[in-house]
Length: 165
Image (cartoon, rainbow, N blue to C red; front, side):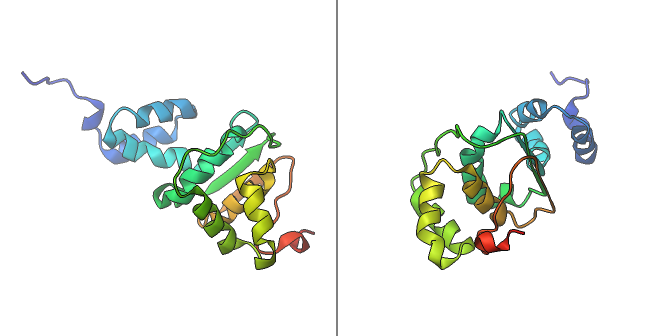
């Protein structure tokens, strides 16, 4: 027996997308991504277009970095990256990923001056310096149009400290 009651899936995708645009509560959008493949496809851009790391979420910088480095689908969605009142430290460990060392090496060699490769690779892989990792991540986000940082400076890995005024 089929139901004559309309469901959310009977709405046009454009309307669902617009509705999601007005949901300010990110956990709600995250939950919607888990409901169905269709909602996941429509809602995922709303999670990654504007990434804001706060003091509570900054600890997940490593897993976020791994996702963005390994998924061009997610990386290309990022247009805005903001850090608010997050000062590094207490980062959760890197997720288990078989090619992590090679990936870090690839990213460092792509964006960092040759003379600093070894130091950057060590800091990104093992160091507690979240600024180094954040600098490298931001350099790899090719579609970012807006960055906002509250409380710290980032160094362009390609220019080193001489690029800082």
